[in-house]
Length: 130
Image (cartoon, rainbow, N blue to C red; front, top):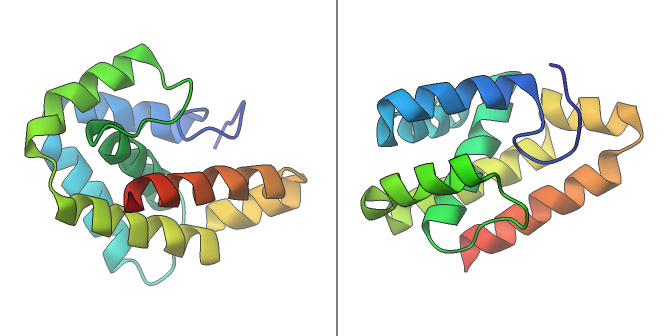
């Protein structure tokens, strides 16, 4: 995974997932969450897609991360009417699972930027729970 920052969309896998979101809308979010929920071991790109989906759910519910790209904000507005409280509950659980043990968490911890990345995921969990 090529990454240039800790934000959910600051990597190649999440950027690729946005193309799927553009094409399939809510189905892309549902698939990303279901894939993570069903995974025995959370590995890339499943973990990355789950975090990206969580950020879209949070934005669609009026709690976007600061600095969210405009194109993703527009996609969140588009899917917003179809996002339910269940999506937020599922996205929160998946984000907590990614944080607790995933390939993505291991990569960030090994990079030395783990604490900052973990704070960003904690923030996502808080925004999904509100």
